[in-house]
Length: 189
Length: 189
DNA sequence: CCTCCACTAGAACATCGTTCTAGTCACAAC
DNA sequence: GTTGTGACTAGAACGATGTTCTAGTGGAGG
Image (cartoon, rainbow over all chains, first blue to last red; front, side, top):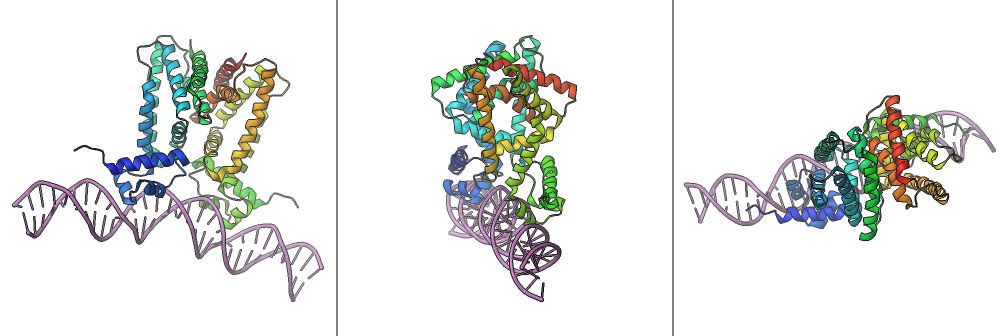
């Protein structure tokens, strides 16, 4: 009885295809309507708006990447390197999904359509800050303000992925290692 | 006879005020029209569209920051550190202008309104790549692909400025130094 | 006085995201 | 068997936006 309705899934699939091809902003509800076969009313029955569709797809994409999440018992160095490396490897393997996430991250603070996504990102930010504070408490990393540390660790990876081309896995591994060691060097005590 | 028309200047000033207050996307032509006292037709007489206004303001803002440009005769370390440090110090001193530039940079690849700005950014990218290639030739920096090096050097600064609060000058100096030394450590030979 | 032309004004247009109104269909109640 | 009910669909209508169109103004040159 709790099946996901076909219509809802069709809308999500169509929206993802459109977003990956044209970006979030450039795809219109009309395009999603055509590709999914749903009607306008149907779309707004399942989602509160374009932003809600984007948020659902964002969470879905994040879930696909979360498998790279480092185990919480590893050392600070391993956890940080795994975070950065996982981000880069996943991003180079899925460049258009990565670009979509980046577009949504950029738009979230400015676009009220994406208010819920903004809240979701803020909660993720908070858990990352807590994890980093824990590493600071053990003396494993420098005592930097978290926004500074976050920018040092993940800024290069985000920046690179924004304009990266599809990359074969072995090259992606090497590039990921560069960013991972640079991130660790930047924040290690 | 070649004076800049008052109307044009009034439009630019009004647009800058609106963009700084609400961001590029959230300001409408109508707002610019009201604040500047110009009419719709007048705006489109001077600019080909909203994107052209943004591009004009982008160049204007870049000019205000270009004073931090390092002298070409300095060492690679000095030039790179000065670039990063200058960006951070200027960005922390002008947070809303910095955020506007970042918004426009994010939007440029996706929004056809900003096609001309996109070309302008690409040319700037090319000169930076050439400068870096020169440093590589002298053996001062690692032999990294330029996109990787660029992300390592400026990614953290861009990332930090995106969410930075106004900062007093002395604190800004310290933060800038953190990012500058991290950038140099990441790419030095 | 006439003619041009840079410039202005505001109505009109196309498109977008969203809301509204009306309805269909399956199914449970009685 | 009829009637309700509620999930779902459909498409017209709405308001706002960026842009274009049509009409005009006013001053400089012939």
